[in-house]
Image (cartoon, rainbow, N blue to C red; front, side, top):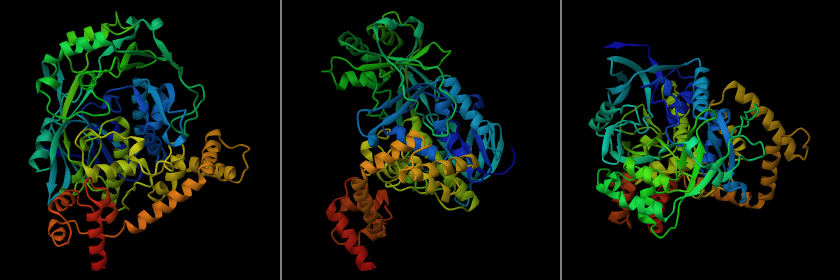
Length: 573
């Protein structure tokens, strides 16, 4: 074994969580090593070729407001823009783009290369080096050891990853790439609370074999909005998507093939995402439906592959082929890559604090699907927070903690560390109780001060923010000449909802004041509080809330239990 340069932060994994984590830590001044098994795959879109959507688009805009890389990469690669929920209010609209996979990955890698303190290393991390219950570095499969003060684990679906397609089984984090088995074994050996989850992907189709003429087209939005206000380059050529549906014949094919499905044979025991189920799950659970929508999404400008969004599956290849050929417009469609399911290790996020730091092992931070979430956007948002806080840990800087009233990022992290997960977590606008104030369009205005205080913005972003703030102030005064269209709309929306926003701001103030009452959530301390049942003590002991506000969001904790906690805290005070 031999040593290489010591880094402040080591990031394990080059997906959406890992790339945002590495960039965020570097922006705060940390020296960073990003380690990936294949550097050519850093920034790869593993599943669908899209960024954003309902709830998810809010996360992308918030990551961008803190100078993250996802939104700019999405704009660099966008071949289809669509604002979801356009007929509804701005608070629940979801910006979404289809991206050229190759261009997206190239943009991510180019942005990372611009950080002078960030080095990318190809290799497999197999061990965490631990000294005195704190991480001291990582070891690679080739014997290299890399000392550091903080490690961010952003392993995606690679930790103990297994692939399933019908009766076929293989090891891997995604098709053609080996899993991180030894690191998963090491984490279990450390006694960390681990479990298994599942996700899946649909078959990829050859677009040249699809009968587009019989399908309903869906065109890109005409108005020239962007994911990031930093984007100034003209749009790429825009491609249309198309819509088709499954039918009763499709459902019969799927039912006939369930005997080879790993989901129904018991081969996959882990839970999958409720809000993005496989097509066999949909047919089994919603048997009365006469059809399920399929969005045919192009994967690139010079790529004939089509992603059929809505039919994630791990059925046998023969069944997948019959299923595809039963759908209107796909009668002659050729499958280039069959769909498959992935089962992988995750860590119970209740083992983390709001910095996304492991309580049991100092200096270790976790982000992305490792924490029980699903989706690129959720991963990127966690990566950003983990990166900011790993840099804080390594360089003695203030922690970056966002509460539920500040952003969707804060909502997600609070949900994860207090509630845990029983299935892969997906961000939804309904999860945010203050969503009227937490719009996708005002993320920059909301989070600029928060990010500035943490020194989380690069020089270009600071200059951009200063220009945009001046325009926003001018628009607020009614001086609209030269003000960007999106800012004018943002200020107009603020005026329209001003009474409601004021009321919500007062509610947030009360929440922050009353909710800061500290509580002792150790089981022995909870046992001493009159009025707490054994069930309440168990729930609070597992979640370990630090304040009354956090306790109020632990699933199943009753108003009576909260009253007992409040009264006990007042007596102690």
